[in-house]
Image (cartoon, rainbow, N blue to C red; front, side, top):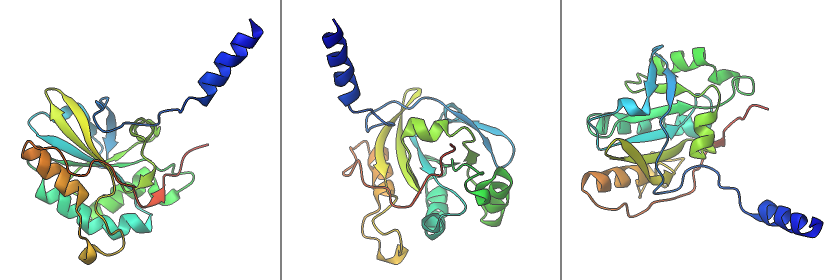
Amino acid sequence: MLVMAVCMFVLVAASPVRMGYEVGDTVADFKLKNTNGKMVALSDYKDVKGVIVIFDCNTCPYSKAYNDRILALGKKYSKTFPLILVQSNDPEKSPGDSYDAMVKYAEDHGYDFPYLFDETQNVARNFGATNTPHAFVLKKEGAAFKVVYIGAIDDNARDAAAVTKRYVEDAVDAVTSNKAAATTKTKAIGCTIKWAD
């Protein structure tokens, strides 16, 4: 009996632990505080083809390099495929990412899309977000949102002028044309999320 119990433990311990959503998964609803003080839920988005969720922050050099591109995404798809930014860094580890700092950052950069504070870091954990920025393109199917793309915004984190592949835009355009995204997963390039202890 003891041998069997040990064998079962080894099998369970050896199984890979799944971290976050994969392409095709349905995303659980979430509700977080926006920089305007209001609560925003994924389920608030009714008459859209989908949503772009990007885990981002104020302080990461990669996030700063992508800021203009993120603003452009927000403007380009505001009506049909809105953008939601989520900030999940622990302010104790990264003081420049406190809620008050987020409010100022959103104002200074003219954000006209939600910039949400994931204070418990549960949303980042559920998504499996690891970096800032880390993008997820979600397709609306009935009342549900399904993951169609995970990874980098495009193929050049340092130089917007040198971008040759726009992964997020390509995925959004594919969904709006009722096609499958050509690329469904890439490696997110950026700073690691600062997790609370």
